[in-house]
Length: 133
Image (cartoon, rainbow, N blue to C red; front, top):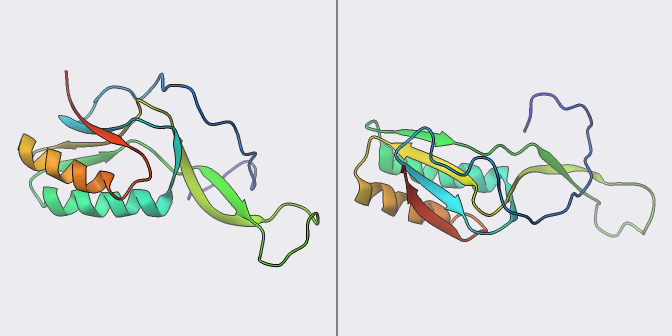
């Protein structure tokens, strides 16, 4: 969740297109790149981060390149149509195909690949393991 936002509620926005930024591995040696456009919730990012941290232990470093800054609203159950927009329920990060979501350094390539593969199971998108060019 962001510390401060200009507006409490946000429009839906359109999904689609291809990423033009955050497409290269910049900080670490290995990365996890998305192949689909999707919303990734803060809980899913945290779940993937825990998996990666287990593999890195104290030897390596992890970078999370996406941030859940988009509020998603939900109306309560059994509420009739109308009566305004619902309250903010959770936050998501919008990712496009080609976005590098996580980066890792300080571990062997095989361990990094296995960690990224396990982290990708926690995410709602198809992912690919990439290395620094």
